[in-house]
Amino acid sequence: MNFVDRKDEQSRLRRQMARSGGAFIVIYGRRRLGKSALIRQVLGDSDVYYMAEKSEMAVQQSLLQRVMADRCPAMQGMTFGSWESLLVTFNELCQPGCTLVLDEFPYLVRSCKSLPSTLQKLLDSKQLRFNLIVCGSSQRMMQRLVLDASEPLYGRADERMLLRPIAPVHWQRELQLSAAQAVEEYSVWGGVPRYWELREREDSFEEALRRLVLHPNGLLYDEPAALFMDMEGSNQLLASVMTALGAGFCQFSRLASAVGKKTTELSVPLKHLAEMAYVSKEVPFGEAEEKTKKTLYRIADPFMAFYYRFVVPNKSLLAMGRIDRVWALIQEQMPDHVGQHWETLCRQAVSGNTLCGHDWLLARRWWGKALNKQGEAEQIELDVVAESMDGKALLVGECKWNKADYSDRLLRELERKTRLLPFAKGKKVVPVLFLRERPLDAPAAPVFTPAEVMELL
Image 1 (tube, helix red, strand yellow):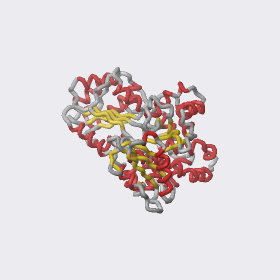
Image 2: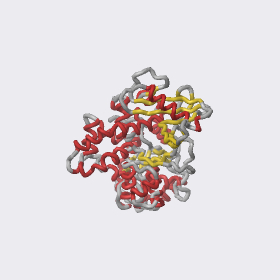
Image 3: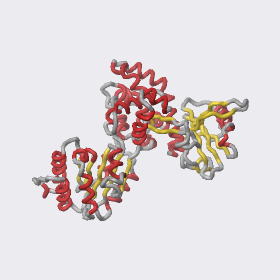
Image 4: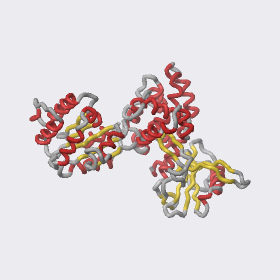
């Protein structure tokens, strides 16, 4: 697979690496996002790339010295008793302006707690002749090393880059998919380059799911276990939380009950999962996160959502080789799974964009009770709600992931629900439909299909 996107990241890295004086660059993010591949895109022949391992300090130093010697022949045969002597020597002998990459940096810190202090000393000397890039998948540790005021490297980074998933439009172009196919596949692979790389090797979406995710020997069959290795805390508790969320226990109290823990015991693991973007905290449109009692937790990462909805509950069947039976269950529920991620993409497409003649703020979902004409409390849910930047208009949207239908029924229901909302009063309401296919009739409101949503993303 070709290297996909990351143009802005490459530009920022090259800019820092080209300036005079050694730049200190920090790159972090969850596994599989292509951090190492991004770095390799910007390295030249004189640069040194070292991937750390889980080994003792002396072994790490010896391995790094060998890699350095490939670029600095004068270092051949030398021995070093400390990180400081190794790095100072490299600084003296390296080609000025070259770059040293310490990938999986947390492994080095675990083998030598004083390494950040050594790097601080070198950076503060202002005598560095090479650029230094540290990279890691242990997101919390990387954040602590550069964002915690008590840490030696705090405030010293010239560039701090948190890598995020790649937008679906890039995968659509790379695999030459239709917009609807891209949404469907994105609901499983998300924006993670490694997953798409593996997907590209298979003949079809179905074959990729069967071979990679559902088969006990598939490369992604036990993927969450590998991802949780980079997180602090009990992997078993993290997996239990994700399993409960996948089963639909989204309210805090119900989630705690499903896991068999007190609510106070879930705050930390939920925080860690949210920091890694595996889980999102959702509150209704217009309500403050710190005040509302309607908070919901959901699995935000598409692959994790698919895995904990379809793989974990059926692992016994999959272990027995009953892949066809599980696949039948997936086909039955897949439209609902894709529909949830379609809603998320639609909200992202609205947020901060110009649609229907207005500039919109952050779009959210809204749910709650409102009084209907009969004076009865009615439970209402709206898929997309956003306020215009001038505060005068309100966009309300309905998202559907099914075959072509008539739009008039959807619009009537959307407008009926909107009239019941107290926060819609006094505002110009802009109803919008987000549909998988164009409606069978002539719509009386704007309709956005996957092709239009992709352009907005």
